[in-house]
Image (cartoon, rainbow, N blue to C red; front, side, top):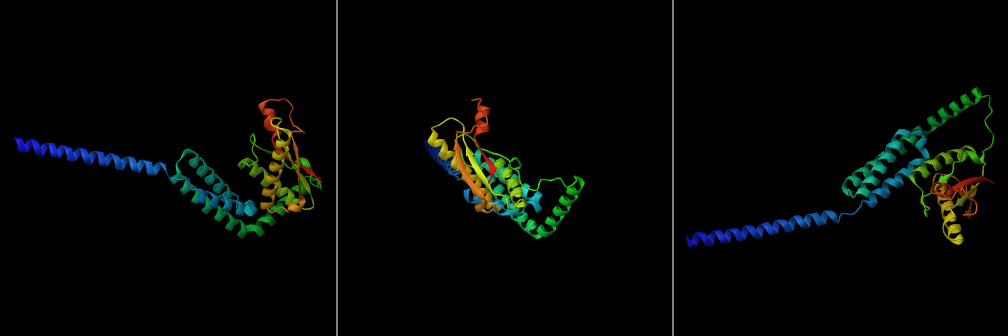
Length: 245
């Protein structure tokens, strides 16, 4: 009986030790998983590929939209902490962007001819009354979050449309004017307006617009689009808009 009891105690002790060891292994596994880092390199690679494909995106619209959507999904997964799935999505966005670029380049000449023919047909139907010069109102305003100068996805899409117009009216020169809402010191808002205008200019240059055509001016808080003092008014004032030179 004594031997049996001793063996049982030893067995229970071994089981307890192995149980504690297993729990420790599980804890280490969880900690290592929690320390995983976001796939920043893959995200940057996908973003660069998308930017590179932008210049021919009009001739590979479906693939380009798919790449944009995949990158948005990757960014959302990073925000939620699902880094493994984010890496998969980011790589897929890169592959789609590469595909969009290849297709756009291959179809560029034919695509441009089709666009020119469509434009000629539209001009004939409308009596040829299209303005011969670019008008400032045709270039859409860019909006920014509070205290930010980074371009959102929506802002980038708007600038892509603006770049198309600037390519079409290749003799037009514009000034990008940066604006802020009334909160903050005057000097700070002047600097913030400058950063916003420069961000717009830089992105347009990445889209192939000659920087010599793009001036920059900051008005800070001096020229509000909305003087209501409301949150909606502040949002309308945080902008970059275009004037013809």
